[in-house]
Length: 93
Image 1 (tube, rainbow, N blue to C red):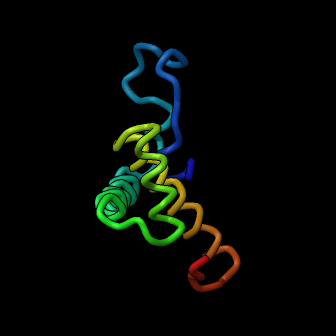
Image 2: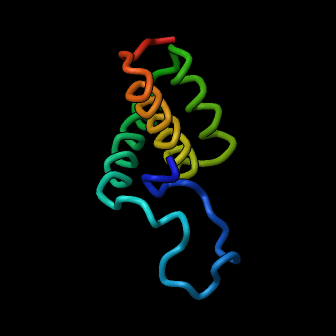
């Protein structure tokens, strides 16, 4: 996920810098991951069946909408990377 630039970073690490370490990835790819994750979080709010929806709802209660969105984007990116690396299709757990 670091390659897409959506890993968390602390502002104190580079205080005063225009670009933080987390923003070094492909901006367009990062935007697509975030847009997709927002849709997942919104749909999961109305639907509590399935492992992913339950995880999203629990995380949203603890951390809020925006942090949950980034967590879902990160999870989706790791799933996609694994599928590409192992040359496998998506498998619902």
